[in-house]
Length: 408
Image (cartoon, rainbow, N blue to C red; front, side, top):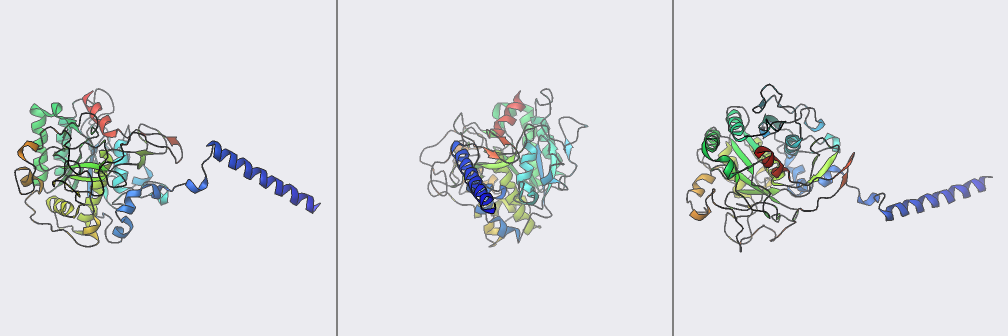
């Protein structure tokens, strides 16, 4: 009887193994060897040597203002991190709510707690988030967001936030006249207050390559996107408004627009959030510095283009490498009173020529280096699937979504 039972068990095991192999071949289940943890999907943390940096700095004491569609304070990765903030599109509504999820996704990339390995870990996991809403939740409230953005920058400048993250952008026709003047005045005011402002340069690299604001305003750090090889992604908009580059390809985020689970995404929005998190690590280590000094160190320690002029139209002064300061104390902060981008744009030693002013057309330029590693890069056109609670596909056009919504 015992022999018979053992034979049955053996045959059952063989059958189950065969079925599992068949299902794997058919694509109905994924082989266990291909499973990735969320932490493994955040490839850029390893490239930045985040674990080593966190032993020195975690962003504690630094507040990042996230100017977006709001930030969901109930998100597990952000609990206890999100301050009250302000809603400049729908007064009376809480900025700690996020109808489409974009602001929440960016805040997680900056300061997520990782949720015990199950969620997004931010570059600066002990930083705090100040949510400021500049996009409305309805079509009517979503129009004419440039004045709201100007008010939001003023508000952030007067707050305790040191860093202002703007994973968004507007085309030049939207910032003409009074609205554009208000935006430039707000940026200048924030810089005088010692803040560090970062903004997306856009995802139009293959379709128009339009100049984006506020990234193109003097003193704002325009952030481009690179992939895992540190090559500029083809979708990343190029031009003189690019100051730095950061990872923006195959970035896990919490899915937007109410979809469950986590999505693989791409965009200069993500690159901007990651750069803001990197700035927080440096600033937390040097709490007496101001935004100009943190920016100068980020520019000095960035991975430079291997060919062509500096700044490059594709990655600016280079790809962010915060570990060189956090772990090795490299980079000189210099003057607290001078934004290192402004004199360069006015014709300094390493400035673009007058034909490449920040408001100039950002059309591609041949012969320029796109990366510290190699030229070219992933075009970001085919986002892949992940299974984390749910299977979802994200297109990565988050920056374009915000711009189009603001123009609707």
